[in-house]
Structure formats: structure tokens, C-alpha cells
Image (cartoon, rainbow, N blue to C red):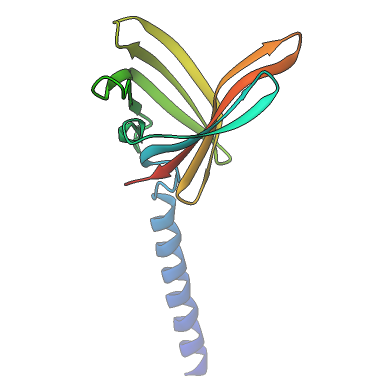
Length: 154
């Protein structure tokens, strides 16, 4: 009887372990999935690092990362006018490798012009996301960049 109980205990344990490991392998655990709003920026220009606080208009902007790898955003600007959409993505994808994310997208500006852009090495820490938006390199040295900080809203 002890052998039967031992065998049944092992069988039940293996069944539970197998079922739980199958369930977790189907989960999409990418921490970037969701909707994000811009809450701050750092600007490095002319040798100075300046912290920028985003106003109410810009904080209406959203970046959205879907679980199917689609990326989109809407950026509001021109607060002195009526807080209108300054630019938005028309097509975008995101990829990840070892919790470092990259986005490639086409942006459409308010004047109708478009441009393809890539943002590498996005990092997520809990409900905060960080990335370097623009980088200007002259003579092998970084002379200008914007680091952006986002808060998860959904």
C-alpha cells in the first residue's frame, strides 16, 4: 500500500507540474505591452543636460504596444494653439530580445510629410519606460540627444 501511495503522489505531482509548465509557456509576458504616456524628457545639447517637464498638452500623447507586435503613437504638441496632434505613427512594429525592446515605425507629421524612424534599446522598469529618442553624432561624439520617460496608463 505504501508503494501505491508513493506512486500516486509522484504521478499527481508530475501531472500538476506538466500542466502548470504548459500553461505558462503560452503566456505573453512582455512588460512593454500596454499604453504609455510621456511624463518627462532629458535634453542634452551644447554640453548641457536639461530636465524637461512635459505640459498637459504633451501628456495627452500616447504610445501603444500591442501583444501582436504592433506599435503606434499619437503625439500632441503646439499647446500655444489648441493642443493638436503634431505627429503620429502610420505603421509600426516592436521587437524584443532579453527584455530590451526596439521599435521601427513610419511617422506622419501635421504637414503630411512622412519619415521612417527606428528607436533601439528601450527599457522597461515596472510601470516606467525609457528610451533615447534622438541622437546626433559629430566626429564620433554624441553632441545632442533626448531621453524620454513614460508612465504606463493601461
